[in-house]
Amino acid sequence: SLRLVPGVAVLPEVLRGMDGNMDGTISPAERQAYPARVRGDLELRLNGQRLPLRLISSDIPPPDDFKDGLGQMRMEFRADLPPGAGQRRLVLKNRHQSRIGAYLVNSLAAADPQIHLQTQRRNADQSVYQLDYRQGGSKSAPLATDGNGFGSMFRLGMHHIAEGADHLLFLLALLLPAPLLARRGRWRGAAGLQGSVLRIVGVVTAFTLGHSLTLGLAGMGLVRVPGNPVEVLIAVSILFSAIHALRPLFPGREAVIAGFFGLIHGL
Image 1 (spheres, rainbow, N blue to C red):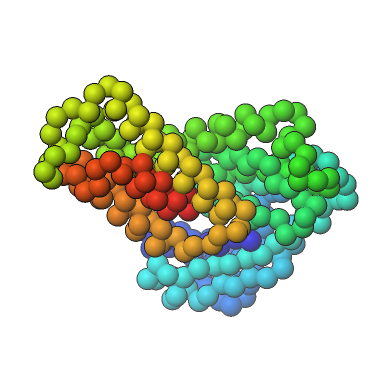
Image 2 (image 1 turned 45 degrees about the vertical axis):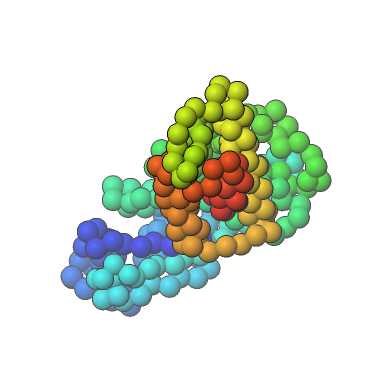
């Protein structure tokens, strides 16, 4: 399933790619022919074997709809996978408009209970996507028969921490006053080494538990929340923790606040 959104800066080049006879206009026939060009730039392989893609549906609006940067092209392709079970690896390569393209690719949770998604890998610009999954067997089976499942998930977690600036900002601001004591609405005096360490451990642990809980529930499809309100609440959490670092809003209850906002960050 492809969604192509040509931004206004690259729209002229995209339209030239759709203009098959180079007459400066995009006819309905050329709009219908464009998905075939996209299909030619896609490559899907299962365990190294190339799978032919066929177009199922396409929706390409008239060129005028793109001029405000709001037009979207949608295409659905399908491939027949050979029968089989056990460990399988899908690799998708997308070469369409590689000079001006920005790619985002992901896999939806499988509706088939016999298909268990395991690890996903992408190259730097996400033009190459690899999905390892297991077909057949029980969900309780190990993530990967080669023992790399845990290592892959660990590396993914470390990557998430390294790039999770919003989480790190929230925690950093919340931990700044950990060595301090609140008196009469101000930070005054030191809490001591033991008290400071206990606060830090409590805040980090509470945030991790809250974050992991909702991340797991959302990842399993048990909780679905629109993304925009979550992003706003994450920004609010950073604002709260920053104000608290300047003047105590909830002294002594930092772990509770960390756990509560951790639930939101996990979404």
